[in-house]
Amino acid sequence: MPSVEDNRDRWANYDWSDKGDEWSGGFGSTEALWSWLLQPRVSPFLPSAHTLEIAPGFGRATQFLVPASEKLTVVDLVPACIAACQERFAEHDHIDYHVNDGRSLDMIEDGSIDFVFSWDSLIHAEDDVVESYVTQLGRKLRPGGAGVLHHSNVDEYRDPESGELTIGNEHWRAPTMSAAKFRRYARAAGLRCVVQELIPWGGPDFSDCLSVFRREVRRPLRRRIERRLRDDTTVVRNSRFFEQVQQRRATEIRELTEIYRRC
Image (cartoon, rainbow, N blue to C red):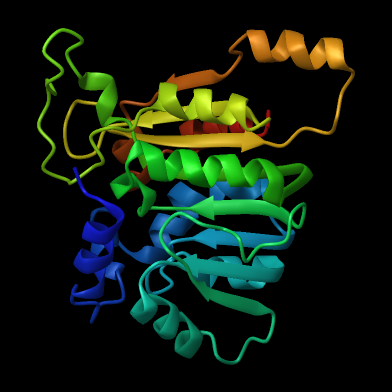
């Protein structure tokens, strides 16, 4: 399974000449990716007073967060990615840049983040890394703050007896991470995981997950205990994910947007 060091080495030595736009080809363009996939899902949380993006790469999604954030903080474990973002967005003075160790958010002030976002990066992060980030986000998000994180769900397809995966993993998703684990990490961090959209990526299996969560405003102790004891996350297995985006299925996308608004 890929370690933090594996991820750092892979992306530090990657050919970034296309700035990550090569991964938008299946959607038509990066602009189409944002307009038809990401923007409908994050629109309930933007504009934002302070947005945190984890693992921005060369700024493929960052470019759309810049005008939608009064303050934007980007954190990446690859120095070349942070340097590229600094150059790409040099004309903007409301962005803070940080190179981290691949799991720490110590540079972020507690209770300062309104919206946290990560797309197409944490899918390669193993369960211990995602748990570390989610645990810290329980403190870094302000009460009422929310997040949308894209992560692996491959561990759902692990045979309980043999411990082996029952599906292929050609897209290099983290094999130890799942939607169920994310819900558990969120509860432990005092976060409410409201929606999870499970999506197939180049096959029939739901290898990816978009988790939507919120740090709730403090409630009476009894209600907090009751909520902690139950899992009330809306889980959507969206087998038409790519078809909706590629064929501009606006009605279906609007229906999904309403589900995200429940956060």
